[in-house]
View 1: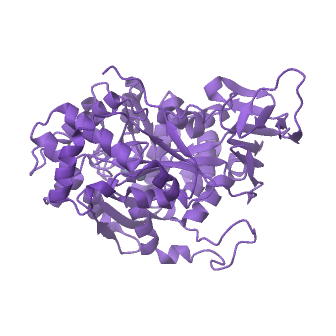
View 2 (view 1 turned 180 degrees about the vertical axis):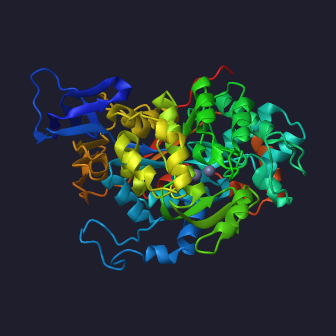
Length: 560
Ligand SMILES: [Zn+2]
Ligand SMILES: [Zn+2]
């Protein structure tokens, strides 16, 4: 049996309180192990001059499901944009796959792994489209994956909430949906707002009634957050709040936090939800207000959704907000879609410009949020790929956070009003490697309830990224020297060396099966899919996922 020792590297493992100590890591049977006294390794790699961290975990990235495919379909020019787009890769282990802001599944896997990431989570899976989402993620090589199922804009949930159905029944419906879709959690997008748009409402504030169902986003958020806690799902409600992208939306964001009444929740891509309406352009940074609220609410975690300048394509379940943004599409084309009235979908190509005041300020707001929230365990590094920018920009983002003079240089190039007036100018904090390791692996693992990922303690999965020390943190994080997945060397100096199939993370909370009688009736009357075919079984999930391993995460013990 092979026992591999990585010798002489600096280990950064925040989950175990290890900050840069020189220590060896030993890998056996896909796990990190502690050698018994006198026991020798059968192989060794010298990683002197390198930093070793757990594999990166992206907890919010659009890599599977209907709208990513629509984004690819809408932007063929991006797929052709590479220097030699139709050439076969020079690496025989890689199959041809297009790049760009919404890369194909294969390129998604290769590019993530080359950067030291070993897991990625799709945040917006429709229950009726869950098979497609799992198949697409299963087609993504090497990376482990999972998805959050969308609830809160579906007819059945809103109808139950509206008629004052028993909370236990709603909770059981949520539990059934997570099980049927093989999800890792639940995401609510513009709570109630996607549905309200179908009744011609063009906005929905936190305490505003849905014209048809007469329920408010506050009720939707609170009910779902409570249901997930009662079901014992480790990842709390994943919230894409009301009024995404709207000047002054900090009010909605603060009200959403208040609506939780202390229940745990994760607010996603908060950069898009931290806008004031001050100043001559009626658009200002509310990063400080947001950070103060997060600092004051230990029940809340966030990911940022940093924007990066250049071409991308935004793909969101938020049809209401994407419709509102469609006039800004660049190039000028967009898609709005829906299936089964479960939620919605809007795909709008977008180019973030550094000389545009709003875009430049959005860039500054994202960085301000990263740097103003005190507790790195509650801030996850994301660009909401591809909405704020492609995930391939993470090394650049890490340098911006770690290197104050580099940040000042970039800021000075932006629209002059932002370059001179942004609060970012006064922020001196530089994140440490330890804090970056928290935001990119340890915190997402903890927030998702992945006990054997995101850390390097004995027993953890041997998902490891080894980066060669470099003062230029962008160069350092772009091309790790070695990347291991479940103990196998999968990338070396930016070149893929093995392509194992990734596993699927999901949770299976317990619920009262009695709810199925009502669901069967509902689907017979309202649905286009036969109820008996909705739920995905374990064998089928394995088939969907290209034969990858099933990785169920344990739920919390609940009081009930
Ligand atoms: Zn979202
Ligand atoms: Zn997103």
